Each structure stands twice: as structure tokens, then as C-alpha cells.
Image 1 (cartoon, rainbow, N blue to C red):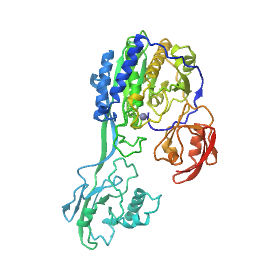
Image 2: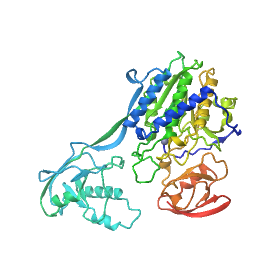
Image 3: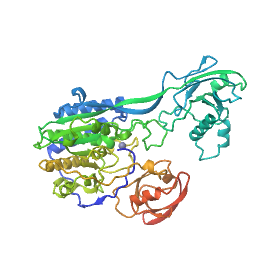
Image 4: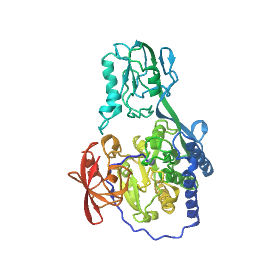
Length: 552
Ligand SMILES: [Zn+2]
């Protein structure tokens, strides 16, 4: 699941007490053992967190392909393979043609200099003296003053300051800017490929201290400078894994689960705030959904449900922003108009043994889902079902909903290991997941004779929390909490909530002047603050009402 906090008002519908553990039948024991085998393989250290476009992803896609083959699925990927490849934009890279020379000495990339990621792709030449800053030539600019003036300013943003400085220099006649740092203060400037700030109108470079000493030490010396900056797009390649059951039917049901995860957290989507280089195992997110997908493939291949074809897709690139599923719906291998409905499983391995909450999203995407959930499947007794009407959310079903396809999204809830290295196979509730698999199987059974489901549009779940909110408390909300307030399920290390002393289990009831009744009011309250603001949070711990100061 991608990192975001959906605003959603879950409709609380059914409350059934779960029956006590029953003896499992032989077939169920097989599924249970298989789920565990799949998850333990996919979440193993060897796969290094299955980051899209890496060797870990490839090991995972090989495993899934082999399982699809064993299940008797057909290959429908590119060139009759199991795979569908797609590009992942990995930010920027410095191309080989990039150069900087001073008096015909070619400086060495990184050791002596590098372009900044917001540099324009351009050439600039000129005969200069550093002290003169004349019109129509490159300028060499010391950032010492900028750093010293702002050394105690917590709101100082060096990136922004450099940007502003470049445009000022340009206005005064510079055709390029080479920054250097002659102060004792560290600037931490590096080439960050993920930098997405607006491109400058002239080339921008940074000279290291070593290069400064060697080439730029004499402000009145005559320097012949030649600059060429060529920045390109850095790409890696992700792979969806596809398997097909062709029942000769007119319509096809798509079942999906993403199998990629965060690797070592290189893409900036980890919740881990430590400094160690750790594998993010992604057992629940989403080895669990992938394992369920494989087992459903086997069950459906052997089933008598022949009125639909079934397409199984293990998506990659989900954690980067639904890359794999977006690519698939733009490059479908079947006519999307003939897709009956899509079922997505993302984080189905942590059914809580005390709350039993299974969340089903997409409830509003077809008028037929309602009657379906009210029918009497016997697996339902294992869950307290919560419904979210929206067809959008932080996972791959969103891509299908956007193509007017009815969707369902299965999810057993967030937890404190979410997007952390500690999301490990030992913490999976395998029996809970077995029941999720069987419940979905029963729904597919009930849908076998229904014909094509009608599609309906739903409200949008806003998932772009980072775009709308400039601040966060750094908590994980408990989506299953149905009382007043927002119950905290987990606390991110080093973020405002932790610094304010909040703990998992606390129920936030007020932020600043605004009462927090639920997720929606919490998000509304958060949107009133910006970085640097201070306020108070009121929360219940047990029966006691407490208050703490928060600094965003
Ligand atoms: Zn995720």
C-alpha cells in the first residue's frame, strides 16, 4: 500500500461475534501451509525488500511465475511470457557529456564539481575574473554569507535560497553560476536525483572545497571557463506478473495484488527514521496479498466457476505510486470493456484477533455489491466487516476504478510495522488470511452467475495527504476504532506526536481549537497548520484527559 492516509468514512455494517477456532479441513490446512510458504519466501532477507526494478523484484517475479505455472495458468505477458515490463522514472542523472573546464583543465565530476539537479541543460562559456561578476559570462559565487547569516534560522531552506540566488545572478547578467562554500559551516549539498524542484534558467554547478582551492582561489585571476550541463532521466524497469485462466467466457475478472515493496527504503517511502540500512521485509505489505493471489489462482483453476475468465496480476511499482497497475490499464492485454470486476488485495495478513476487522473498499462502485455482502456466506462469521464506498484509495484498484470497472479492495488494517523493516513473516495471522482467501473465493462463487456488473461512480478518497497537508503528527490512525476521536495505532519515531509524548492507544479528541471526532475532522484540523506552528493536542489515555504541546 502506498503511504498516505485516506480520508474515509467507513460504513459500519455488520457485527458478528467470531466463532472460536475450529478444526481445519485438509484442503484448508494445505492453503494455510502454502500461504506461509509464499510469505516466508517473499519476505526473506534474500529478496531485499522487493524494490521495483531490482534483483529482489526479479527473484519475487520468478517465484510468482513458477507458482502461476504450477497452478495451470496461461502466459499472457509480453512475447508469451509471464511478464509485462514498464519504465520507472528514477529521477535525474548526470550524463557523460557534462563537463566543466577552467583554463583548459577538465575538472573531475564529483571530486571537483557536480551540477545541481535543478540546473538548466545548457552550455556556457566565458573569460572571467571571479571578483568582477560581469554581464554575459558565468559567475563563481561563494555561499559563505548565506550560510552564516542563517545558521540559527530553523526555517532556512538552502535549496530555496540557492534557487533564488541563481535567478538574481541571472538578472544581473550571469550566464551560469558555480557555487562554492568558503565557510566552516557544512552545506550538505549533493546531487539528489530525486530533487524535483523547478529547473533554473541557466546552468548551476557546485565546486568542491578541493576544486575551489585549486582553481578559484584568486579572485582577480583571469579564468577561461567552459561549462556543459547535460542531465538525463534515470530509469529502472519494473515487471507485472500475469497469469490467465481462459474459460472461453465473454467477460474476465481481474484479481490483483502488488508484490513489490520498499527495498531498503531508497525511494523515500519508509516510516523508519533510524539511520541503519535495513531491509523492509513487506510480509503484510504485500507478500500477504501476493500469497492470497497465488492460492486463489489455484482454487479458481480447479473450480466450476466457468462464466468468467480470470486474469491474475501481481503488480510491481505500487509503492512508488501504483506504477504497475497504471501501466497495465493503459496497456491492457485484454479489452478493458470486457472486464467484469476487479478484486485487489493489499495487506490482508494482519487480521486483528481481537477486533476481527476486515475492511472492504469499493463498496459503492457497483450497485450489486450491497446485496452480495448481505448474502450469507459462511466465512463472513470470522470477520467484523467494515465498508468504504470509494473506488479510490492508496492501492491498485484505483487504476481500475478510473477505467469505470467495479472494484473491491480487501485490507486487514494498518499496524505499527507498516512501512518499517519490522513488517515480518512471523507477525502474520495466517489463519486470518486463510479466511480472507476463502471469503473472497465465496464472493467470486456468488458472482459466477450474475453476469456483467453495473458500474457506478463514487466519491473520491483523497489519498494525496502530502499534497494537501503541509504538516503531520506522525501517527498511524486506527481505522477500526469506532468511538469518538481518533485512536492512535502507532507513533512514528522522531515526529511531532512522539515528541509531545503521545503513545499508541491514546485517543486524540482535540487539535488546537478544533474538536477531533473522527478521521475526517482530524484531517480538517491538520490542514489548519503549517510547518513551524505550535499548538496543543488533547487526548484521552485510559479515562484521563490529557494535554500536550505540539510543534510541527
Ligand atoms: Zn505499502
